[in-house]
Image (cartoon, rainbow, N blue to C red; front, side, top):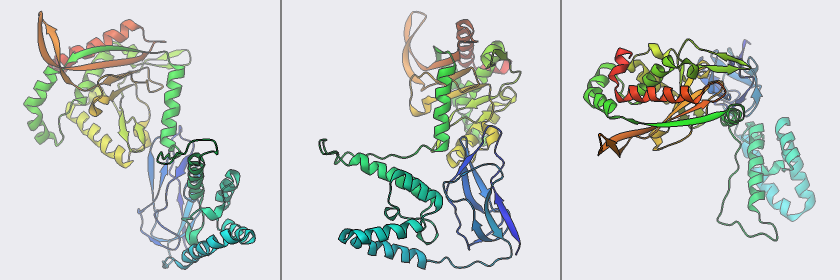
Length: 411
């Protein structure tokens, strides 16, 4: 027998633990080298764990929902073993036993007690502890483990379900909640971390937001003129975010304090421009980083942003891509937002919020004209950035966007 261990991938220094999602294989099943066995969710990304060797999954050490750290053993693969057909009988027997126990539970107390004892033996130790603490009968939980065994993940779900039932059950003196369903689900590790960081940002930073408006006609003209040639040449659409990135970098060069961060009582000035791009994903908000954005072309920026969006939806972003950053951009305009006050992404000191571009009446040379306008919002940490620098930085972004040729000439 040649055993190969399946280990938790190396996590970054800022990530101490992760949560296992759902095993894609069961013990006794054949696996191929590099086949994805399970996904590991951290507070930043979801990592795939591939099989390090071909063979048979001989043992699962950590079940669904387990909390694990870097390098821990998740499972073992026997590279010389032979796959066996999954045993359905125990699961069917457990289901049959449940069905038989149900009427007995109604008929007599002793029978119910016997059923409860039998179900408890089918729960893993971790699951049994969770159920016992919450006062949930294991016989009321459908096990998803081998042979109908109740896993920790099952217990956590059952906990949520029990709370839901308690909330839905009206007190003797309360009104019925029929027709008004509620569902309680635990936050994912990623969403919980985002919530924690946002609260941290609001409590530790002196956040202030300044606003301005920008006429996007110059950008629209360039885009309309070159978008087809651009896509044909570079294989990616010419969007708007790349222009905002270029305008932001131009402003940060003029006002480096906006690109700085606070460390205790020190101010750290960054001699590089790593721009975070806020991206929504099914698991929550992530902010992948455009490294050295000042050195990237419009095409390179568009390609990276498109790649970030696709991999964020699939949970494929790497930890290193979400670490660091000196300034961020949040584009609520893609969802139709007209105005917002973005929250700083610590340890950064400023963030630019961009919104939907809409035709609006504006005054030019004493005349009311219709122009495609976009409201800009710059939130900044007033501890180190004075209003003057914040306003001037936002004006510099506005001027660059209204005359985008200046970005090519660096003026």
